[in-house]
Amino acid sequence: MSVAHTRRSRRTAVAVAACLALAACASTPIERGVPWSVAQQPIAPWETHEACADVVDGDRIDFNFDATRPVDLDVYYHQGAAVIIPLSRRAVVADGAVLEVRIPGRYCLAFKAGAEGALVSYRITIRPATG
Image (cartoon, rainbow, N blue to C red; front, side, top):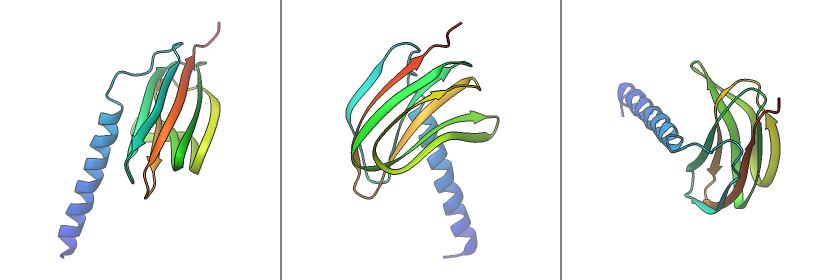
């Protein structure tokens, strides 16, 4: 395999991954102030499942989850071309947190399964900023 072919393959893989990540959050975002709950979401091996919400300064992202197998979790948002990850967990089967928003935008929770896949149940509430 030539170096040029390898580079093209890598660029294609990166482009496909970026498109999948964007499509995953293209669905209707979680509403502020309305609890969102998902039970036993299947995630295939090495795949990612995302849940996103549009938030403003002072909102709090309150979430918890449990999984049948270890998953990686990233809470992220975009700032210009950069991807900012204010919270990241590796190989966990349960966790939760309340993340206070300082930069408004679309925040996503991304669950990534390992080699065995996983079922993930999660609960998210976007608690609006109080005046």
